[in-house]
Image 1 (cartoon, helix red, strand yellow):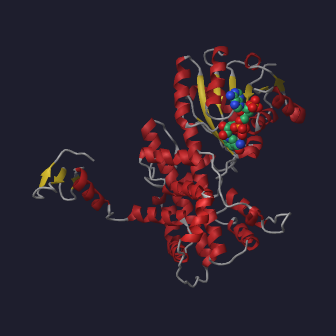
Image 2: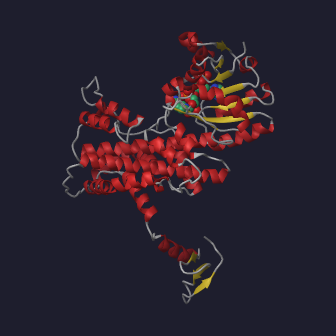
Image 3: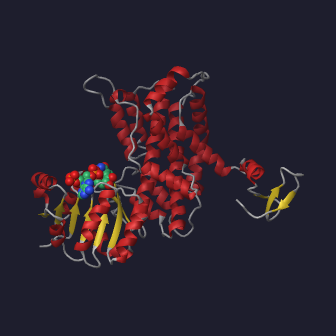
Amino acid sequence: MPAQIGVTGLAVMGANLARNFARNGYTVALHNRSVAKTDALLAAHGDEGDFIRTETLEELVANLESPRRVMIMVKAGGPVDSVIDQLVPLLDEGDIIIDGGNSHYTDTRRREAALAEKGLHFVGVGVSGGEEGALLGPSIMPGGSAESYKALGPLLEKISAKADDGTPCCAWISTDGAGHFVKMVHNGIEYADMQVIGEAYDLLRSAAGLEPAAQAEIFSQWNEGELSSFLIEITAEVLGHVDAATGKPLVDVIQDSAGQKGTGRWTVQSGLDMGSPVSAIAESVFARSLSSQREIRAVGQQVLAGETTEVTLPENFVEDVRQALFASKLVSYAQGLDMLTSAAGEYGWELKLDEIAGLWREGCIIRAALLKDIMAAYKGDAQPANLLFTPAFSEAIAKALPAWRRVVAIAVQLGIPAPVFSSSLAYYDGLRRDRLPAALTQGLRDFFGAHTYRRTDKEGTFHTLWSGDRTEIAAEDTH
Ligand code: NDP
């Protein structure tokens, strides 16, 4: 019997997705550049379903039913292009190449356009949930043509995570690179989500002196309420874990420099390109960069003054921190979703934000109870201009606001860096402010670069003759 899907690239993610397809009743043709990985997978898990072992891409393609579905799970970047180039001559019109790796959406757009000219479908698919998710049910974000989804969607939906109402956490996102774009933003939000958790931990530790074991309890409790999410749950696990070698909390033994593979940085770069203020995500990426500058930080510790102000912590400081965490988290989701709206305009994608929030409910790293409310916020025709403007969230933030301000003030007074807590608050205040100092910025730009300005009291574009008699003239818009 021919296979319904072929998977090439059988490292962690590819192997687990292949197993997931097989466990769900599909026949899966397997291929890896080096045959050893194929054989290792078959030796360990060959009894989980119907697999077809192949040694070459020709063999892989020959074993697939039509239209052929070939999923590429190799290292992102050049290797994906290389595998595509090898596959193209082997495929027929209407066949589908799927890239399930973390490819940059601009690469996906380029590949999709090139393959469409050859009559092939190319589907960039965002897959979230890590190794375990790939095996047990990830959140899946497919782009590509609507037509390709008809042949591919049912398989992806079958292997995806399911929300508690039974809906698959997989839905067609929109054309070309939309799936990879949404996955990228998911990862950007994930960066911010982890950073705000880190800031809460640092404040509870450094300001309130709460040891990791005590904090494990606190995070467990938080996981019962509105913060309930996978990341809060595993924070309790990690903080509660004691290192066997030293008997210390493991978190005290782990070096304090955070790695990154690039999707957070891509999100911020896209935000910069589109003029979309993803400041919480940017601060999270930069916080990781700063953490990695260990040698520079060692010098900083020696030479930089650290005078702080004494503060008396409020009685409910732990609850204050929880609220600051919740409010900052909402801002990072709002910024990420806002960037999706910008991208939809830029690339002509019809992004349904309620559906996207819906497929993040299970399977992915940012899965959280909150996503149900976010889904509800974007249901129907009246799309809020910003997530924070919907009554449910504006009220939630209003409730958290006094605590959020207290926590940011305390962090500043005690010299505890809380870049996302504070920048999210600045974003929030910026959003609700009547007049921003951008008026002065524009005045300065006009002074040194004749960049012109608009007036609040009449239509048109103006320039002041700063180096002349300082009269104002009507001008061409050079904004
Ligand atoms: P890796 O990114 O580590 O890639 C290893 C695989 O790529 C191996 O199968 C390797 O073959 C193959 N490969 C590398 N170069 C080539 C090439 N030039 N030609 C053909 N095959 C090549 O694998 P992962 O499973 O970790 O990730 C796969 C994709 O999924 C990546 O895009 C990753 O970013 C993404 N992803 C990973 C997650 C994770 O948790 N690891 C989570 C979500 C997405 P060989 O065995 O012969 O060397």
